[in-house]
Image 1 (spheres, rainbow, N blue to C red):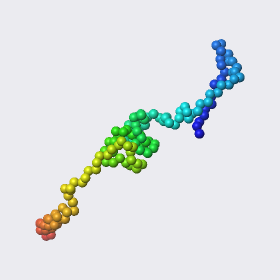
Image 2 (image 1 turned 60 degrees about the vertical axis):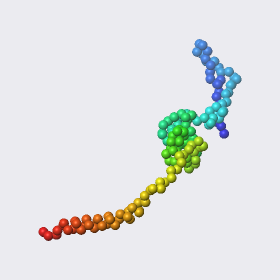
Image 3 (image 1 turned 135 degrees about the vertical axis):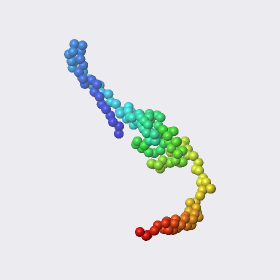
Image 4 (image 1 turned 45 degrees about the vertical axis):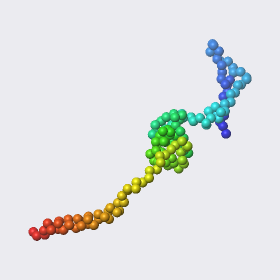
Length: 149
């Protein structure tokens, strides 16, 4: 239901040039303004918002609503969202878990390198040598330490 405002425009006393007030006329003019038509909810009251990625304030005309987030997370610059998609590698919002509007792209996923090294294999291959060195160091330290006064 819309808000209505009624303004009585003839209810005030009119003054003459000599400063004496006249009696208001008997006819009353009333202006009815429908607030839904005049200042509807289609146009936001605040014309600026903050980009949720770079946190810079900008005109709403320069910002987009890339997903279904609301409130202060609603608006972002298109370039900021695209840069974020490139960095994380996908086009899904972490907050509302919806995909961003069409037009945003993510880089192709990188395949793991076939020459990767499994640390467990290297560890078990050098472990006997490390243990042998450790025992030799203990023996060398014990032989140089004497218990005599």
